[in-house]
Amino acid sequence: MQRIVLERAGGTPVTKRAHLGAVASGNLEVLCEPPAGDGATIVVSTSVDGYEPVWRATLERFLEQHFIAAAIEINDFGATPAMVSLRLEQALELAR
Amino acid sequence: MTPATLRRSYVESTPRERIVALADPGTFREILDPFARCSSPYLAEQGVVAQRDDGVVIGRALLEGRDVGAIAVDGRFLGGSIGEIGGAKIARVLERARDGAFLLLDTGGIRLQEANLGLLAIAEICDAIVALRERAPVVAVIAGRVGCYGGMSIAAALCSQIVMSPVGRFGLNGPEVIEQEAGIEEFDARDRPATWRATGGLRRVAQGHADILVEDDLDDIARTLREAFRATRNRERLSLARLRDRFAESAPA
Image (tube, rainbow over all chains, first blue to last red; front, side):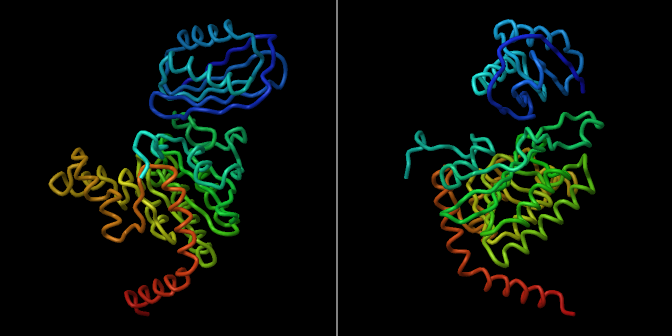
């Protein structure tokens, strides 16, 4: 199990909470809520070790595309990067 | 009957979607949602990622105006296994329920990573079901992909009524457990049709181990759940008395 934290300052805060997905094979759970402070924080717990560069690339791309401030928690059970991106987009749509 | 293409599938729905679809519209209030972050403290130290609701959704809802406890186990997370937190969530809702409760069970039973704590939790759940059904209906629905096995099959058997779809399976030991313990001559767990023939909803209802057969259709299950609640209120005290007599016969003092 590996923990990855990503932070970025600034951005427009999300207004609502959103929860979706499950900690199930090839899937992930996303919790997205308005940030306590300023900026975006993404905390990942993943069951698969050794993919930190892929995680960082996927999450940085998401934050590049959306200038948001939010506290996002990801609990992952072996989701592919495409699945991760899809879930993040879904969460943002619900939380914005 | 609704054509299959227009049905809303129970199997394809998430635990929260299932409760919302079965309860009176707009009445479900979740207790300890994922943002309460009541997840298992034991999984991380065993290298397992935890889910924030511990795989159990609980709350209050109305069913034809009755104030009932609503419970759904998430079969996607660790096989819908019951650990200390998820088990406590279920037991507390049953203890506080006013006019009954429904349990949407999609569970393999005790969570092996939490061993005795899971056992204890299931004992509490069984206790709470027996206490609640003395005064109100407790209805179990077994219609998910995992089915209902292990300790939670005992909890289901204690309910006033069991509703099953052909997708659901219901048994004390799961197929893999039987194969492992009794040998492949006794049961071949890879033979999936045989598993459903032995423990699937069609068989269980025919045997009388479950009460009502439904389609994999949220509207059908919603209707049936209400019927089960209405029917239970009349026959409940009688059936509990019968249960006690049967126990007294089988275990004389």
